[in-house]
Image (cartoon, rainbow, N blue to C red; front, side, top):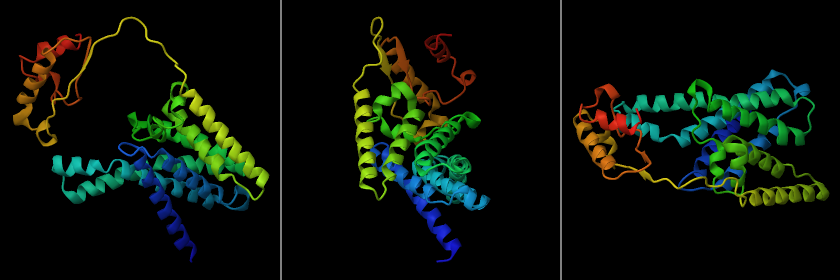
Length: 297
């Protein structure tokens, strides 16, 4: 196979692997699949030639692999944006597809830059340091940057897959980005098997020990309740998506939530972000006092 053919095949594999982690989230919660996918991504990176053996071409290939992986990850996670834009936003289908692809390509730049930086930093590092320290740190930094840059888009960062996994006990200590980082380190340990049975035994023991420690952290109560319990009400008007922003239905929506808010008192009342689908100064006069009073203004 020609070099460009092998490159296209690798990029296709990377994009396909990136799409699989969408199954990590509701309703699937297949967090083990994410570890397998991340292990494969690390394997692709470790197999790239070292810096002293090649030119900038390898670093660019690392970027493109990360970009393809990120593209697959995002487009499989936010495919519903096509439905929102086309079905409910009346955007022509071809334009909605193009918008979704361009958006996914843009967000995919972040893992691309992460793996580019990791490739740059590899230098004379051993595969162990590269897989367990450099790549996980760069990848986690890229995810944090994605959640911050231009107000951020932290949708489906890797750590969210582990709310119910063995790594769930890390959330109080490291947060979602730190938990994703540890999961990538765990995936890195899994790929570092060598021909030596002693090395395989060490890797296996490290995996088991790592998993046990993370599981035990999940049984620690990191916080304690303070004061008296508060009463919380969560409201959901169950308004269909196609009617939610229709101008002729705004009054009906406002009246529905007004009745639901007034139905019972509570210390905290939470409504959907689209409960009031208009600006404050455009609210009907009879609804403004209720909203401002409930908002504490």
